[in-house]
Image 1 (cartoon, rainbow, N blue to C red):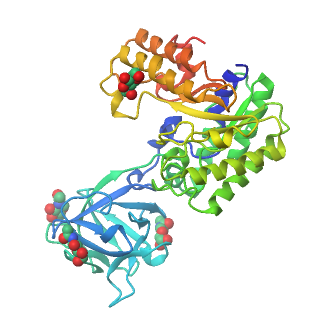
Image 2 (cartoon, rainbow, N blue to C red):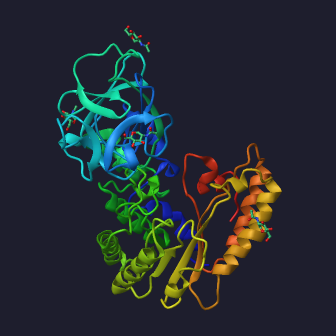
Image 3 (cartoon, rainbow, N blue to C red):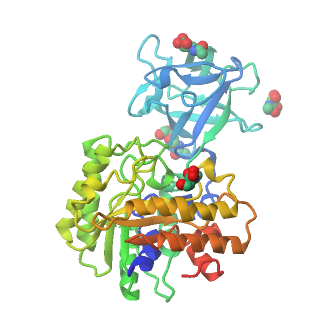
Length: 459
Ligand SMILES: *[C@@H]1O[C@H](CO)[C@@H](O)[C@H](O)[C@H]1NC(C)=O
Ligand SMILES: *[C@@H]1O[C@H](CO)[C@@H](O)[C@H](O)[C@H]1NC(C)=O
Ligand SMILES: *[C@@H]1O[C@H](CO)[C@@H](O)[C@H](O)[C@H]1NC(C)=O
Ligand SMILES: *[C@@H]1O[C@H](CO)[C@@H](O)[C@H](O)[C@H]1NC(C)=O
């Protein structure tokens, strides 16, 4: 439909926050961040060299730290909140921070505080000849040691020879890391980060003409999108990708440490409504405003149907306060088993749109599929899925993200062409249209611009 292609071209420009690796930020990532092992959200596990077991937040947190686990998973993983290149808070499974206990002699290590302060701040010191060996210095100036399997204290003084007989030495494993805007910005630090981000917003996507609007701050990038769109007769769909607390736990919702807390309080729902109100007010008068998508990919069950529905109702009203014509797009919850769960709400709201994202990726079922099976899956399964949410009297349907990439290695150009063509045909039946993820990406097949220029996709 009219507006479909212009809308997709701008989708990438209009992330309000939460750019992620898949948008190309990895171009920035490995270039210049010195201590990139220790960015926000990195999950670390520590095995005591003397006890031979992992540190663990007993019961997941709210309790003592012990050193009695033979293997490491959730309770044994400590997520970094970075203060600077050497100092950190450690957040545990149940979201408390590691710090000093208040009982006894005040050197016992616990995970009870829900906000980090000085006593929850630790320095990580790495061995110079084996970067997997670390010592952890507490705010009292002493190092943590595993005294016994059940007693971890901050009372080890002095230097270390880093040997297997030193109870203050731990072998560190990196259990996971995030590569989002939060991580980029604190990786570069407060002095460099604003310049790095501004440069990215200013240069990553530009109009072909020589116009370069060089203003600072992310909001300026969004203003640019509207100016460029108007100059080129395009329409803009604003899509809020990062809501306070994170609605899905991934980098692109700007989760700090992989946690998902959006929608759990009235306060963070209201804050999100306020952002929509602000954006709608700012752009309602632009002839290029086509739609406002209230939030990208809230994920079940963390984002409950109840909180998502309450938010969508309030967000819809916030848009309508400023515009009677802008479409209001509601992203289906990921991992929900009912693709029509928003229909009771959306059917009663004029100009509402349901957004579904279809990737032949991110699930094991695609790993063993052949080229033809991938294409058949589009023609049968996706086609049926889309029909189910495309109704004559309900909300419009939008395939707001898809990509001509799959789990197949070594596919030919012709394979890709057929795969893309099948998706264009099927997703073209969505009543609101579709958007390719994404316009420009460091991975060629994820870059619509590259795919068109190189003859993989023909519109
Ligand atoms: C890092 O943060 C700690 C704790 O706030 C502070 O004591 C230290 O001086 C900082 N180091 C640098 C290099 O800024
Ligand atoms: C690191 O160097 C120290 C001092 O030379 C040595 O005692 C220790 O065994 C070395 N550790 C490793 C893991 O190479
Ligand atoms: C580890 O120590 C804690 C505290 O004493 C105890 O409750 C827990 O059962 C121990 N776990 C294992 C696996 O030994
Ligand atoms: C796709 O749809 C077919 C036909 O309805 C069904 O048999 C098959 O299990 C579906 N495939 C997947 C991976 O869900």
